[in-house]
Length: 385
Ligand code: SOE
Image 1: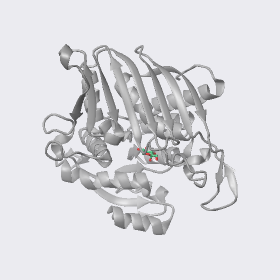
Image 2: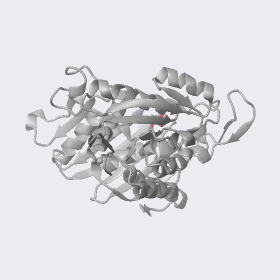
Image 3: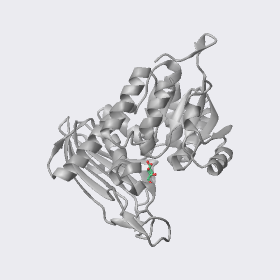
């Protein structure tokens, strides 16, 4: 994909349209707003138009998140010639239609995870961006948490050695109350799946990123609260059609084995995305609820001094992305990972290269999700597509 020429030089200004005004719309807006302030090398980003279904809510989001325009008609926005990037930050049931339309309009595309609600949709989305020759980014933002990027560096330069285990859990507790109404995340027609696709997709992505491809798996899932009020306080009830939790046992192509859990029913776990990697030369552990810290154990330490090192992964000149922010130890947050993702992708766009994770990563992730659903149904080991 060649960057658009602007006056004989590479494109250095990108005009963005954001489809989505809720949690991810807010997180992505923050990244587009901050990327040029903290990364002067990044191409200039203009927050042109934000799209949502409810005109009043969308206007509020426009004003709050700093967009120039608000629209309730995403199709007309995707067709505009003055828009370079389409950012799809809607529930999963809209991803395929929006991405295919954006690709056919020649737009560069960001899409929230998981890529799609089904494997078939993911395949259509990859085919569309390939046919259009446009760039595509899948917003698995946790790859760009500096401590996770450091873990990737340490795995790649051999400090963990040959990988034996990847052990990951993504636990939250917001769904615990039976009084919680049937929000879209409990509806398979909108969300595709429950904790598996929402939270499990993140740890599957981290497993692929850090340890390689998953070849086969066994899985189980459960819906603990099977019916919920159709609206807050309503006595009318309706079925929950997705999983509340899932647990996988996985084998990697490189011989490593692992466990992956995703649950919205873990009291006290607010955003507990955690992994541990054990290898022939050491171990690494990370916990999103303490996201500046990476813990590392090396078998090469002196025998009387062996133990997990606690690394504060935001030191100038040492850790990924640290130089854009503060002096050592001043810490970063959840939102910085989105800014790092957008920075890396804009740089790739402007230089006509690509970055990760792409929609190809999304398709591989979707194959793991699909195999997980099959395995939970069959109660047998299933190969990943
Ligand atoms: C679920 O509550 C959620 O918002 C996920 O959808 C996001 O991907 C995750 O980053 C935070 O939790």
